[in-house]
Image 1 (spheres, rainbow, N blue to C red):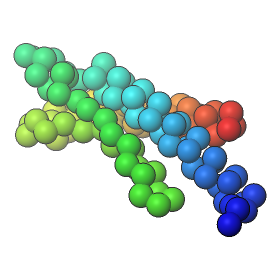
Image 2: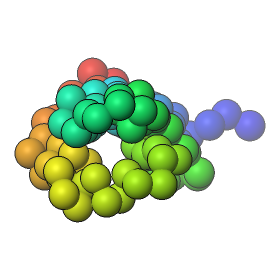
Image 3: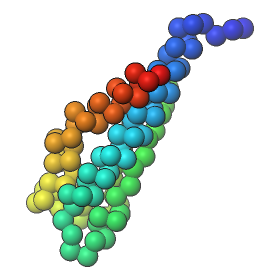
Image 4: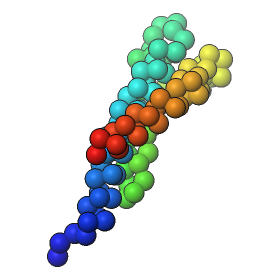
Length: 101
């Protein structure tokens, strides 16, 4: 049975959105690293990213397993500042990838 045009279009859009999310979280990770307060450099080096697609949901994650990262963000604002200052840019990255198809 052939796929409908709607299903094909939806799959293409979701694939483009996933590519865009991957690019956006890489940018978010880089911005977070650039803003991370450095004492030993351990926290800055520990930031990672991931994109998870489940059905039609695409979730981008930037994080670390360093226990004191939460406190560093409270005092230095690395994650929150990166997200707040660059949110529109991250959305443009995703939208640009979708517009390319």
